[in-house]
Length: 136
Image 1 (tube, rainbow, N blue to C red):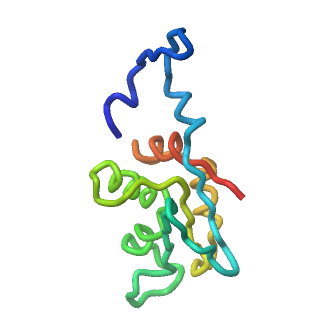
Image 2: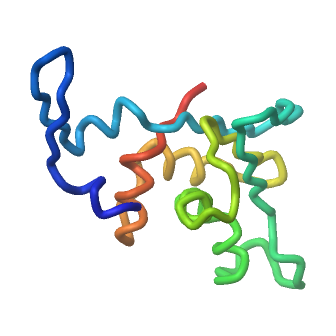
């Protein structure tokens, strides 16, 4: 994120000066749709797609705590990386995110993360909370 996003700044609006705050970001946050069953909607222009993998492709039981697998399922980290890739000019901007969680056995963790029900574990989680919101 640009440094200016965290600073108060004034802008003229209809002949009056208006001070924007970090709370204005919530009005401009990007909707996130998490698909847990069925088919994933067609991704159009302005959409970004994140596919959550059930496992990293290596052999272990489903009950094993694996850092590689959890990294591919951490939706807040993936949303942050998506936002950073736009900021760096590596991908075009987007106005909606579709998260494909159909391959996961329990997608509730991904839903809770985007809905803000899980505790933030890193600064990126706060950035994601301000810039994305769960819909549908």
